[in-house]
Amino acid sequence: MNTNSLKTFIAVCEHAGFSAAAKELGYTQSTVSSQIKQLEAELQVRLFDRYYHRVSLTEEGILVLQQARNILNAQEKMLASLKFGERIEGEIRLAMSSSICNRYFKEDFLQFRRKYPGIRAEIKEGGTEQMFDMLRRNEADIVFTLDRHIYDSDFIICAEQEEQAHFIAATDHPLAKRRLTLQELCGNEFVLTERKMSYRAILDEALASKSMEIRPILEIGNPIQICELVKKSNLLSFLPDFVTEDYVRTGQVTRLPVEDSMETVWTQLLIHKNKWRSPAIHAFLDFYKDVMQKNSILTEK
Image (cartoon, rainbow, N blue to C red; front, top):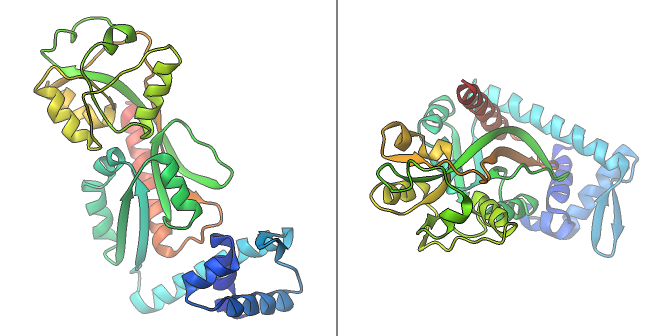
């Protein structure tokens, strides 16, 4: 069996069409069609149903897709082992928010880099819906979200962790030692992450359900910069606890006790169900599953 035909078949599945797969692979559309026909003839099954320029996998096609990934994954591992010993090489395209990037791409990434020096990573920051669009269009291999708990049949949750989020203020802020309500907070000056971005969107929706709104004087994507602004002013903010942990521990900011606030978000590591997992992708997922598991254990303690 020609593995090039399997790669073409997977590309058609991942890009949801013959023309898009041809563009990605650098083939003509007729070459893609020819390879798929040859594969169908060899396997004696129909892999796709075709309707008005759209294709969908048949039941047999779904089974072949699963096995094709296994075959190519085994081939990649064999070639990597022969050529590089235990060295894994490749590129990974990641989509995530600034908060997740600040959390997982410091010491953890340096450790990952020492373990897998042949893997190169590209990070694209964006909102949750934007990142999911990247997955669907195969513009990203893996997504790290920080949002409400998300389930979508198109995506596989590889790892997840429940997180806490709180309103924060400088330790000498007049509200720092009071029990508060959302209504009391809304009249204060805020610096928040951008509207419609992950936990900011959840906060806005929670406030809207109570007919309330926070209109920040500044919206900015970098959560560390937000902490720096809050600790030196009377500005308030709303951030996940893992972002503010060092600032709270060193007494630079404090978490405000708010009676009726929403305080739970989720970190999730996701991949598209049709995505072929290269050795580099496998290595990244396995490494960061362990990192998230260790973080979860530390949080529970």
